[in-house]
Length: 231
Image 1: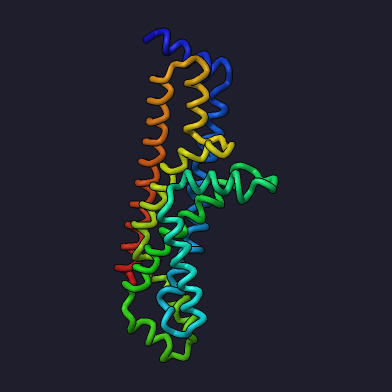
Image 2 (image 1 turned 90 degrees about the vertical axis):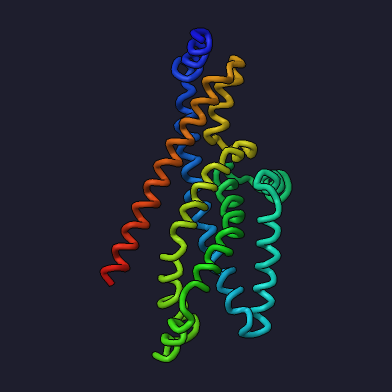
């Protein structure tokens, strides 16, 4: 056991492996948060098209495109999507690995958030939208000012779960030349072929990050509930 600790200490401290770990931790959080932000934008747009699909043919056509997009990104593994974007779509373009990962995770998240937001929009009483239209608001304005705020409140817990899922999924981001937590500890482990301590430490890092995110999501939920009670 002492030999394993010595090997880990040598790579982690003496040879500066902790710098890779810190960079990997930063990148993991950036990919997850930015990926969710992109996903919320894309997902909200697709959900809106799906809900409003009966309004006219053009909207139905865009909604159909959204359905295809959702099916593709929900039906293929995130690692396959990363490899396709890295070796095919971005092969002729010089792009930062971190940005590449953010784009792919954002597109992947958008497919899942679309279903989340669709459920959130449908959970709002249709009378709310009709009341907004009665007051003279256009369909888009009524959705933006009346429906979306309530829908987002309803789906905050589910969006929190999506953030946690994205954070765990970032463990494959290192396959596209991005320094994430998994890649940082893998480099430490393979340097001396001592895998036990580095991978146990990796699991501990992910566990702490996920627990912190879970606590933050619960705090946000409680505050939203309090604001609803006051209103």
